Length: 243
Image (cartoon, rainbow, N blue to C red; front, side, top):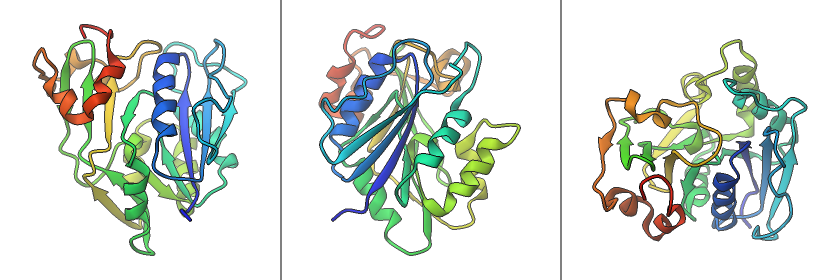
């Protein structure tokens, strides 16, 4: 039997993105899964029924007492709300607007379980695609991973809590990778792509504003890069921006 894992997703005001996220989680080649979703959007909460999720995945929906307001960064607050609910030894951060392949958890867990002193794993390099402008960006990160591509052992939860409680609570992923004293494993499984420009509440990262980032490169009109990265799933994003 697989080791149970916990997924944490912070979302709000992005129903289209979350619907895709739910699809990706439902097809993970792993179980049992505890999925904690913190939705701080003021509109109707995301669906919390069983729908397409397999019986091996349980969903817990958390609604903060104060909703997100424009200009706020509530990621740290929402992760802190999820921490007391964590039931399993292995925790992964699943971002609501990113693409995940079916084997994402399996590959990450294989690295997590490869040695007793592995307490954090991540997929690198980070790959991002901005749908409206058909631009992409591949980072050269080899010593750390983005939060959406990171998993931790429960022994690192106190560190995660400390980082989220600090006055400057941005760049949670960078702080985790800088301050974790345990072995860190980076792997290139190509099971995650950061998707930018989806409808709904805008993201806070630079990647959501490619005009501000000189490192973005222009894709071809036929979107070969995105098709190469996610295959047939490119059809899920039809009708967005210039698609």
